[in-house]
Amino acid sequence: MCGIIGYIGNNNPINILINGLKNLEYRGYDSAGIAIKNEKELQVIKSVGKIVNLEEKIKSLKVIESNLGIAHTRWATHGKPSEENAHPHTVGKVTLVHNGIIENASELREKLVKEGVIFHSETDTEVVAALINKYYEKDPVKAINKTLKEVKGSYALGILFIDNNHLYATRKDSPLIIGLGKDENFIASDIAAIIDYTNKYILLEEGEIADITKDKVVVTKDEKEVEKEVHTTNMEKDAKDKCGYEHYMLKEIMEEPVVLEKTLKPYLEDLNKLPSLTDYEEIHIVACGSAMYAGMIGKALLEEYANTKVEIDVASEYRYKNIIYDRKTLVILISQSGETADTIAAMRKAKENKVETLAIVNVKTSTIARESDQKIFIEAGPEIAVATTKAYILQVGIMALLAYKTALTKGLVKDNDKVLEDAKKLPRLVKEVLDRKDEYKKIAKEIYTKEDIFFIGRKIDYATSQEGSLKLKEVSYIHSEAYQAGELKHGTISLIEDDMPVFAILTDDTIKDKTISNIEEVKSRGAKTIIISNERWNTNDLQVVVPKISEYFQPILIVPTLQLIAYETAKLRGCDIDKPKNLAKSVTVE
Ligand code: G6P
Image (cartoon, rainbow, N blue to C red; front, side, top):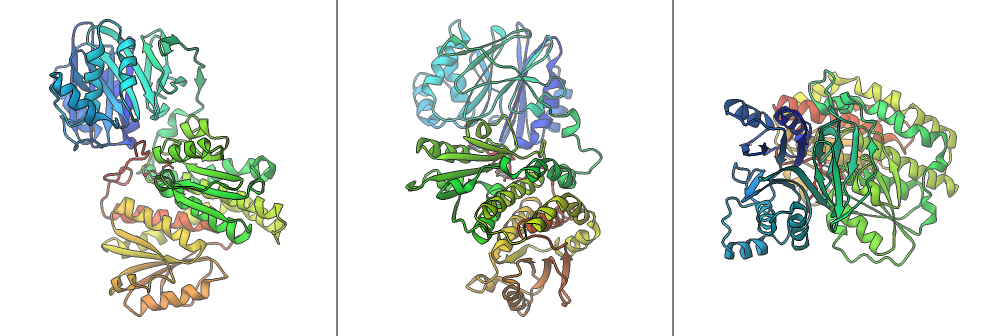
């Protein structure tokens, strides 16, 4: 959700800022802009659409000499995507870029208008610029501090003042780091934006203000200086390259065997490294999007095989619901980015109620990773494609191991050795499944011209269907819905028409026969069924058959097939696969 980069040093900032924006483009991509400055002048250039449009525009203009600048890529919240609404915003002496949402913007705007401020955009960001400008006399940090006391909401801000050549930054509920280079420093909403220049960084905490020059970073909170720890990331420079793949989505799917090995190995060697869910009387799983669907798999496994009751909710609901915490509860938060605003709010709600939290998270420096009581890191590395693939698989892998450990502790596992052996085989088996691209291309050819598709499954196969359906709709824009196979006939079956594709997920031996009947129901109404199963069926349907393994890990062989079908379908439809319209990878606003 919106990306920020800033630079101060000895070099011309334009290439650094543009390169950084391209690395952040997954956070939002409806408009972009930069502000560059020198001792005397400041120049702002903005453009609608992708970063390349901004790049082209800059090339066509005469730009000032500079060695300081800020830049932004936007995912619209307040005001439509347009040059006026694109960041940076300037009011008086202040120019800034902003991620997040200022919740009391209209109130503040009204007051400022009465005081004579003329606004040029519909954004909440311009209000912050106006406030800082109002309080700015000589001391930038004082003016920022005063402003922060008045604004409510979330923000990461990169700020320039016309009559001073420093770079300022502050944040609350939206990530921002300070990258440390030699005779140059950076700000960025994600280390990926600056990894080509430095691997050293400082994490800015809530309400801290950084005053940055090329050789010094002074961080204060309430005008008192704060000592900051310098961190080093082990992210590889090429981790964000496509490595010859046509799209990040494909590259990231193909990485699944390697990241599975890396993530699961330590726990397969010693399950005691995982937290013990049997210490709690109640488990809540809270997440958004695909992470929530990974949680659904966890719930299905915990209930079915570990006899453990689990409540699951999307974070945007959980945070506002009256949750009754009357038993010893563990709240499991699942998030790739660790910065999803609703999931953060759910975590804080649990903490306020003195309930323990466990995060399953990819980004180690993220808010969720830092604030949660217990954490399990998945080792996905940077995930750039907006639609998550490898991180989802790892979230499912961890949930499966947690369920298995719980079942083991309760003495419920029948064939212990087989489960562990199967878990160790996963990287090889996933690779085998991924290597069968021609099968997925064939299915994609069958479905890419359709406008409506259904996925059906029961129990864990329904949870898997949900991710398959989400992946397909988000990258190919085909309307798709996942249904519990037995429920479709209670209304929705009226939508089934001749040749409408229906994917049936069929892996759970306890319920396969029932789903087979549901397949017959839709087929007799004209649907074209595609069966994704762990055994071959004697029918004339299109089928994908994956190896049959322990129930705990079966979804990890099914979902990659659905990810590749979604990818190939989106490709045939000419979609912008890595950056689907209207989406952002990390939704840091409510
Ligand atoms: C956004 C993304 C989804 C993602 C969800 C949760 O909506 O587009 O792909 O599943 O956020 O993100 P998180 O980083 O918390 O896993």
